[in-house]
Length: 104
Image (cartoon, rainbow, N blue to C red; front, side, top):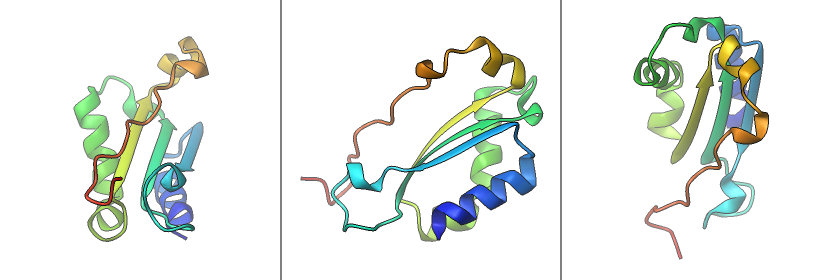
């Protein structure tokens, strides 16, 4: 449910040419079936000329409710169309290990 909400909100607000939302909760010490750890990869013309901080603020603003109420961790990877075309998709970084209170 949360993954679907994230996808819909980002599609509506950014009209991305590429969007991938990965539920990475299984990689963390959370109950099976949880939706609390996500990674988003977003390619949008909206990011052209914007610095990384502004891009992340945009995503955080769009997903404010989810971040406040449902999501424990969100890895954000944003690209303009030109950046994405120049990038080897294997260069998208892996998400860091969770350092949350339920770890280990």
